[in-house]
Length: 270
Image (cartoon, rainbow, N blue to C red):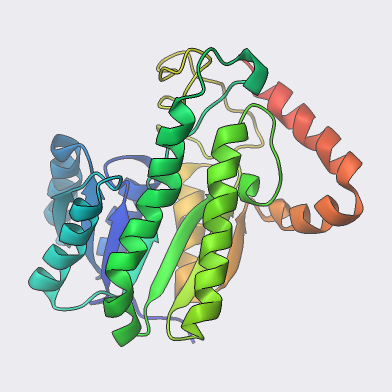
């Protein structure tokens, strides 16, 4: 049976742009009440204004998920406003695009871990008591790099491997009291992930970002698929669908998979 999202309470991290913004708007259109979290208050306000102009319900809670107290405050403000929490969407994240040996400074790996891993953990820890009382859901907006190594993304892949392991362990511990959805994504168009990715000098790449190829997925198709996965109570979804082959290929045809991945990375070079 398809889950009715009307009146469901969502927290979405990284909601000021890209996947988070698109999810926030679409969920609000379906009648969900959305709590939009991100660091940039002015961009959050733009998202909230857009949602409200279409008759949706949403609030913004400026949040730096690397700050434990702010993660706790995010959940507390949600409960204070709506009295419950049904879904936590772990979407906020930062990436990199550089071979490890070409890095001038590896100190930004700590920032990758603080955001992609510790930020997600801190949000989960604050949200779990409220999610358990609602038989709620944690959605992890992840990547195929959580399942295998990936060239030019060593630090990013490490954080996603860590989060994958944490959420799988948490799923065991919850014994079905909380549901989990892992979204394994490839390259998605029209997000700021690449623009904000770290380059070899440890600084954000900005406009010097990689191009997209025909293998990349549109933002609209991506967020439609995520919402469909939530509505149909999926455990794992792959965007695009061919990524579902990755776990199998990584075990039985690793050399073939590595050749395919290397070619895909080369195709995304400037």
